[in-house]
Image (cartoon, rainbow, N blue to C red):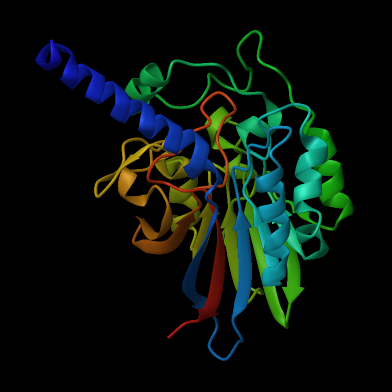
Length: 308
């Protein structure tokens, strides 16, 4: 009897323990990633850029709110929000409360699909199979019947009122510590709201630095940004794979980016040019899959340094 039931019970116990860890501990084990990117002209002082992404706020997430508020203590020169702030249509006030201290600093933002639409309950196994098969994104701009429309306009209005620049299929400029920075952004490729033709033309030749910003790092966004000569692209969306295998890494990216670049700093090559690419693993998860494994939630402090 022991031999018959011992192994299945042991597997069940290990699985239950893993689920408790993934849902109860790791999702609240917030980390700060620090990276240095040599993209500034020689002689300029480094700039500190805080990237926050994929907050996926649900009402009542007090620890997440407090952690995000604490990031203002880093005193960044610039905040870049790469989208998916919401996972609850009622959570706009809590997102704004969490980001209020950071909105005292200069910032730019783009939205992701979960800012516009509420998440859907899905079979996790089916999700993994679809992504492994290369099936990504929604069918155009129109969501499926029954999908909740989130009140993203409240986020936009508050970010704009704080002086943050909306980079949805547009450009912006600002001067930080004597450095002229130009930004080019896209709306979310995951739901086919990106319109690169509206921002084509490459970096601003008069700027000291040009940054590209997009929520989901699809190749159709990364390729033209790189081919046009942007030195650094910032993105989110992937959750770092969210459910990873220790010593192996992510199984899926939820886009057509390869799993080797699912999070952190890497490079992207196109048309004989190379851009730095930073993909944030984000600090949240969908309310219907509130788990992370071997992929803790994070924000990133990027130090933009002079080129060698």
